[in-house]
Length: 159
Image (cartoon, rainbow, N blue to C red; front, side, top):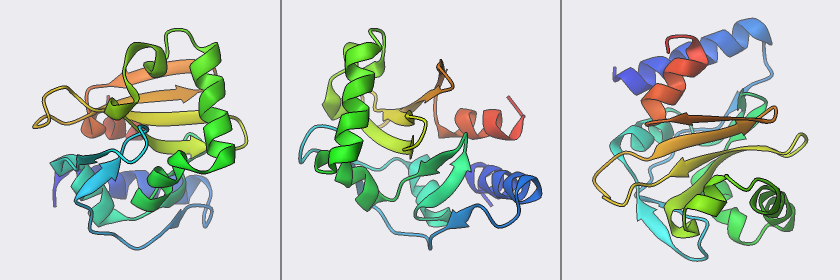
């Protein structure tokens, strides 16, 4: 079992103990590329993210009250009016957000809390062979991680 898969299993176990039955995982999906926030722009999936989608498709209420999105839900950020409105609030009111510092073709919406307006983004590196960073906006705080492994370790308390 890979480290990513092991961390995701631990996160699921932690979630189940905290609130049994409230986290819903959709079946795994095979993914070759993910949508960026630039309309109709995709980026090849990284090895760690491939493992994440081999674990589950969408994951409702996965962490920080955010839903981890399926690849199709990530793509919906191009057209879903409610998501676009939520992202525009981040873009307009957080001057140092990833929107202000990076082009949208390097950003993917990874997770979202549609009630409290929190999101998690993948920040793709300029060198495509590297893993994307993870940027979390939750509870009026920003957390940045080098990759999915570092983010997952933080979520399970190993950081």
